[in-house]
Amino acid sequence: MAASTHTVTNQAPPLVGYDVFASDRALVEGVERHLDPALLDTARDELSLLGRTAGSAQAQRWGEQANAHPPVLHTHDRYGNRIDEVEFHPAWHRLLGKAVSAGLTTAWSRPGGHVRRAAGFLVWTQAEGGHGCPVSMTHAAVPALRTDPALAAEWEPRLSSTIYDEGLRPASQKAGVLFGMGMTEKQGGSDVRANTTRAQALAEDGTYALTGHKWFCSAPMSDGFLVLAQAEQGLTCFLVPRVLEDGTRNPFAIQRLKDKLGNKSNASSEVEFDGTWARRVGDEGRGVRTIIEMVAATRLDCVIGSAALMRQAVAQAVHHATYREAFGGKLVDKPLMRNVLADLALESEAATTLALRLAAAYDDGDEQEQAFLRLAVPAAKYWVTKRCTPMVGEALECLGGNGYVEESGMPRLLREAPLNSIWEGSGNVQALDVLRALQREPRALNAFLQEVGAARGADHRLDGAIKDLLTELADLDGIEGRARRLVERMALVLQGSLIVRYAPSEVADAFCASRLGGDWGAAFGTLPHTLDLATVVARSAPEV
Image (cartoon, rainbow, N blue to C red; front, side, top):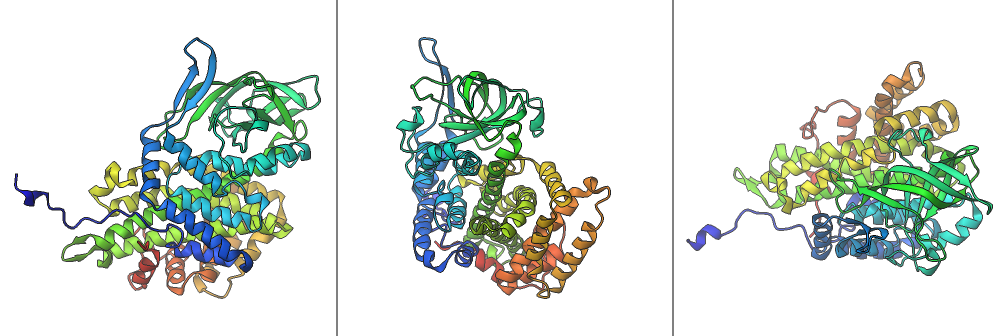
């Protein structure tokens, strides 16, 4: 066979060996905007170090290996003893170890911790998304545990450790621990008040024996879990350790691992409790209120995780179009492809900007910011996670057939994309949560309107969208049937306000014209042709 037939031309080189953080202008600017200047140099160094690792060939191989070799459940040992262990590929442990050592579970214990962690989580998720589940739950468990100061004093230092200490041992013997969560059951799903797992009080104050079945319990090799069960006074939150302090295994029967659409590297399981020892967290009957702060934090991670998938999809699409030629020129210079890429870049930047703003509100911590988060988190979780799947699908198409094959990495991004919209409450749950806040917490609406109103007068299309939103908010009769429409508008107006205030004028003009002004089609790539789309695309290009 002639050697000339094996000559490779007109193929984009792999997007590898680059700084995932430093090449993301929207993310860098968000960190600079929200962090105390005294923290910036250290934060930039940390994030660039993580960014270079995330963009390395090694990290990309870890992501491929962890998904090509999914976890394996071992219910019994060779002698018939119940062990309930999940075996992971070494790449999973390397990814998880890097996440922990990079401080992705330490947000609550350092200055500017939430912004720094959000940026790091957004960067490192681009290497691989599945291992982010235990990282997210470990981070999010802290506010729930703080309802019990004694428990928080015991467990928080372990949760915020930067040492990944794998293996099942008593938590007191480990340099760092991971947490999971078990709320949903097969008969109730998101309606956790329908849970049937029972909690029987034991002789020692605050301790219980749990009996029941959890339909979804991710990362079952974690060291502890926050779960909901019915106690005498109603639904209650409990801490369930995998291994008891005397070294014996707590009854924690893993019935099976879920065979999921994506998220293959992560073990999602069904678990059975049968006399399982647990410690109460918070008061009996206050389980939802106790665990809700954990839920809110994991919902924000769904926003950040989706923003990460979007950013990686845009980076791959723009990188491909920069090198690939068709019809006499570079794809990136073709007007129609430029329109598609610019539209994708807008979606990605708006998601990143919103995610960093929410993280900054956690760092601020005052009452106004907490009230803002009450509405902004579920609205953002609804909209950003909803936009992720079509956006990643369009980015995959930019690579053509190359994007449809596994080696490109795009199919894994696409399979991962629907996940964040489902976990921690799917779209309807988020929309109904926004309605609940509107009806019960007027301070939340005031805080939200003050935030979006900060950009009033800067763009007439944003002003018009705010006016229309106020009209919708004035009429809450029969609101449930149009809740998705309302929450979508709230999220878009919030993104528009942030983009108008903080993004370059070319980005703000394109966002307002399309998302708020109505000059937009039903698919990506339908932006007004009069906009400066070349500048928008150039801003989103990764620097290799």
